[in-house]
Amino acid sequence: MTKTLFLTSEELAGLATPAEYVTAVREGYRQQGPAAPRTKLVHDDPAGMLTGYLAILPETGAMGGYTYAAGFDDRDVHFFLPLFDAESGRPLALLDGASLNPYKTGAVGAVAIDALAREDARTLGVIGSGAQARGQVHAAMTVRDFGTVNVYSPTKESRERFVGEMNEQYDASVGAVASSDAVLEGVDVLITATNDTEPVFDGERLEPGTHVTAMGQYDPNARELDATVIERSTYVPDLYDRATSDAGAFMQAMDERGLTEDHIHGDLGQVLAGDVAGRTSDEEITIFDSGGTAIETVASAYMLYEKARERDLGEYIDIAPGSEALTGE
Image (cartoon, rainbow, N blue to C red; front, side):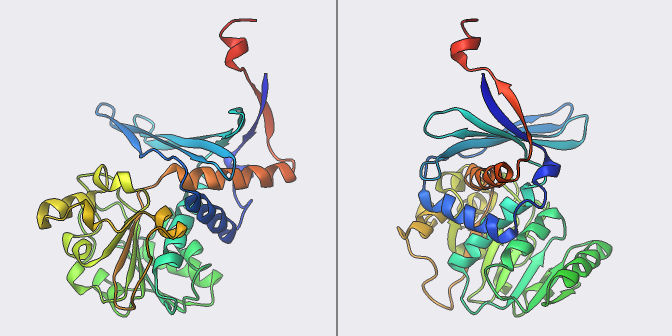
């Protein structure tokens, strides 16, 4: 039997800071190890989806993925995160991936901000006020000294509650605004973290020099960004292959504006490894399209696994290797 550490969501919550997530995720993307785009299986009755993706981080020495079921009769979501040793292939841990989700997703957004936003970026705009928006802001605050944060979401109570929480945690001036147009005024970095299937702002109104991180949609038929802003931008997806498989904003811009794969500047790993340039001018609009990959998932999981072992957290379960289980010996 192979001893495998099981870690609950409660044990993982608060185990690492946003900055530690950012460091782990940056290193994971820099390695450019093998990574598979998301696979999503949709079920109609009851409505739900089963999703999974995989990655190997050769220098970290870890590999694994993320599998989750969302919807169905339970109308909820459950995340499993298996982690393996990349040299031996043995399972290291099984993580309940719920509590880490906004932090690892926020971390990749922050890594992109650090690589693509102007160094003097001080005003942050946020469209969305849910758990993912919180994770994005927590991580973003570790890579730039934002003095102003403007937040919009359609529900007034939700955005005001979000603003109240953020004002308690940061010295920045965090305020709620009444429209997406108001968020765009004077913004240096814009985060979209919504469930909307249609564009959440007018791409013509985005000021030159802005960086955008879009992370709320990963479906060919849904998008947070319109074709105009895609066409105006230096476009960087998290994984090159997914830009034309499930990145709705880019795929619909191809249909509407005749863009081709040549408009893909390079993916985030290529930027971090120096294979392609990041931002090249203060006037450039940059976009990071974050649909989610196993790179940030495995990088975060391994970081948490090491911290959990240091603190003697979790319990060990037995996983039978095939050499024993398949033969019964």
